[in-house]
Length: 493
Image 1 (cartoon, rainbow, N blue to C red):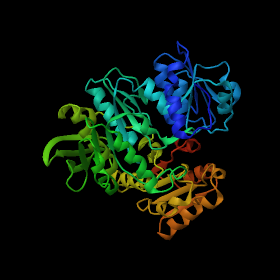
Image 2: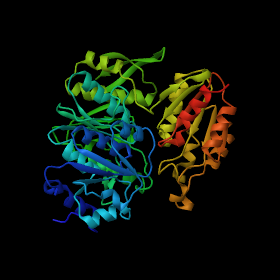
Image 3: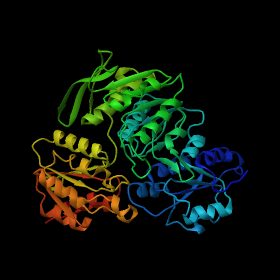
Image 4: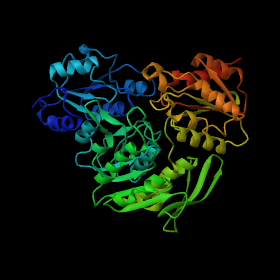
């Protein structure tokens, strides 16, 4: 059997690769990860490291929090992709989906004919074998929901395994092998690898699936919404008759797909008449109090540090899932009461000189809108300064240009830099930060464009006052702007 990257079709290539783990020399010691600083790849590196493997990796975009995370595990990360990074030969190479066929390490991998797997295939072998797979899927809310489910299972003594696209503060890491029967994993719809263009979640052998939302995203790999829907339909089709689909019926697109499930379906939502819903939401002293009902009957009342409709919806799905697994209401409530949140998900960085700093991962226009609304609602009476970096593959394209202009309506001031990496986007498809700022000004919103993050930092320092809430939103490092601003405020004379 060949062990090198070839010109087979993605379907045939994936079929070729799956059995390869069986022919890797034994014992397996050294595993090299190409693209190790991606959120999922770094998590996998940590998981494999915890199992005793010698781990190395390479990447060209090395920034916190994943760089700090890997350093804390003493995993060496080689800067840049070079053929010599595969010398001495590792026993196995795991290829991240940022790697192209022309990548120098991919070319060397093909020449050396070393065994290799994609990230989802590696997870299937090293993490999911012998476990019941709980897949958290949807355009939004995967990280928060995965973290909530994992924490409830942990507090209930079920010792779950998990791999999460952010770092839950209760665990201080985003992976765990776990000895219990369940493994919680984010079901990412992004493609698997250059040799397998199907979505990652098709590899995760789902037993239970939470489906939070379906929207058009990842414009670099999906043609349109119908293309996205086709992937989620395949995921639903994979759930066995003995499994469960937990579906957010606030989303009309999800409602339209429920009949195709061959397993039981539990619905949840904040409107209509789903099986699971939330009543009586109130806030007091940075805590949210709410009541959960099932089939119209009281199920539990709880308090949480989470806020915003999107997070309450995520919490509701976690309650339904963990109840299905047999966890009693008071144990669910106790776990949610002690849930501390996730790094870079409405994470409070500090409040130097009366300026509250919040860091968030929001980048899709819906996520930006919901985050802005949630923060404004949580801190009424305070001026909200939204600082947005359009960095994702979709947000750097003009496909969402008009929708972003509708996402900041509750912000008092908006600051937007020139998007990074624009040369990777065809000229006619590029998003315009200048155009967004112009559109916001037409709505009466104070908005400013900055050529660089250094200029943006100066603009923030010149026009930020005690009582302001500054909300940073980016799915990348944002040139370390949130921490630079925090440091500058602390040291302002």
